[in-house]
View (cartoon, rainbow, N blue to C red):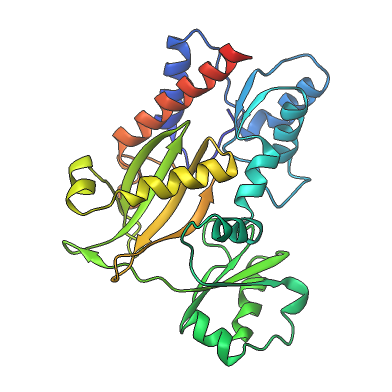
Amino acid sequence: MTHKLDADDFFIHRVQEQCARRGLNFFLVEPEWVEAFYEKLAEGKIRVRALLNMHSEHHDRGELYHRLVRLADRQGARVIDPPDVALAAFNKAALHPRLEAAGIPVPPTLIIPREHVQGLALSDENHALLGSPFVIKPSLGYGRKGVLLDATSASDLTRSVAAWPDAHYLLQRRIVPRLIAGEPAYFRVYHVFGSLFFCWWNCFTDHYRALTTEERDRHGLEQLGETVRAIASLTGMKFFSTEIAQSEDGNFTAIDYVNDQCHLATQSAAPRNGVPDEIVAAIATHLVDGIATELRRA
């Protein structure tokens, strides 16, 4: 398993514990020894049967974790998720039209190649599509880098480009969630080998809370699961999370389509923006179950 700062010791220990229960060896590839690990793998001195990717940079082919994941995949390891599958899903500019064609609800969007940013002018029709203010996102960005929530004109693209140089940028209508019992109807759903784990995620404060089955039934939120399963089927992704908002008109919209290296810092360690511990523990269990099943089939 490659290591990411967004996954704390709780998640790491749960994965290790679940591996031990199934007789699987576990090794955490931390930054201190990733170079040596890569070299030994390239030389054939060690072998990896499965690799949980929690740290590679999709936009940087020279980055060491990126090269490690590619190498493991070429050598036949079960990478969760395979790099080409993950990149195709993570690339928002490439995935957006596929989601639209599949009937999965996404915000009204313009996709702008970087070479068209300079001198770009939005038409009246474009402004009507996007509303004001609108959102700008780099196609391969993450962690809110280069994301603008207050854009009003094409000139705002230069701010996003400066923060995150990318090949494409998405200009999107800003979806405002309705309130349910005082909470924004904004959710993060984790997909783990076909199992789903639901959270309220307050997009204004970053606070997580588990969404119960009773709440999903009471508030008519069944479409959350339907949307995430449709994204999984379309992309072939086994482990990812999706952000979905329900607006005042009752419609559900996928906002952030596929996060393939999920934020799994726990609430006990990070009360402000951590994921409930019980959900992190369940995700760890289902991840190891899924990987073990794939290894048995190999």
